[in-house]
Length: 366
Ligand code: MRU
Image 1: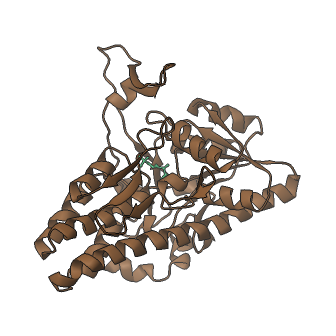
Image 2: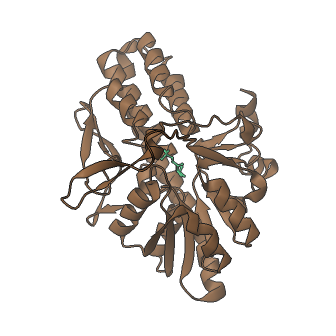
């Protein structure tokens, strides 16, 4: 995707393997700041405090975190401790575990002298594959937008939640990949961007990247979603996922479930974009998905830009009020019209996923 018209990836290794450059998402949309991660600890911190976030980008950053750790010490014990440290950073997005298991399985059998170079190569492969998967998700998901446009020949209104765009991945995004593909193909469209309290990934990140790319969009308060659906102003909801269970239940940013309920009540199709590494074949359904509980301060305080340009944090709630902050919810498969994968759009059912990924039977019993 483009920043100031230049195609840019969200993460890239420095040529001399001295670090990995990321975009610090904690200061967007007010500042575009690149930051170099030099060590395992830098990578773990970037994931924990959400300088990088979004399931695929968390996985990609973890893969490079392993490469950074092995650059310091390539012993097998270091590989184990690095993977354990990175795995503990965030609990819900399964791409983190997927990337670390992939790195460990590839690197552990190698002689120590080969591990460091192999880690950089494998982390780059994780990133390149992410781009290809998301491009394919975009191609398949775009069909939904095209079909809707053919039916009505007016601009298609897509609603999304949180940020499942370019910034949540290495490139293209998951839920926004169909939007970018349709936009590139000249299909007239408009995106309703729900702000996504408490961290405001919609207002801060989705709105920013759509604006960078020139895609028409409007930011709404989360609570406006049901009203817009009720009044025929939403043709299609597309969200991302942090983890899908083998039966098609999906965990995504808090508030996704409410959108799915409103979509069902109003006959609006509700799709989740789910590339293969986001499917947890070890979970029969979504009840076992760990839901991250984040700091109360994300609810009690709000970050924004003051009139003088300073980025400040202000308190919203009475000092004596407590706050709870579950960061994800699980939308049951019965509310999901379909899963947009790199292999096509499949029903959000056990059989639908099993047919799309016939090899998953072997992974499940592994
Ligand atoms: O807490 P975050 O910002 O890492 O969560 C990301 C999401 O939940 C997104 O909505 C996204 O759909 C999943 S990642 C493509």
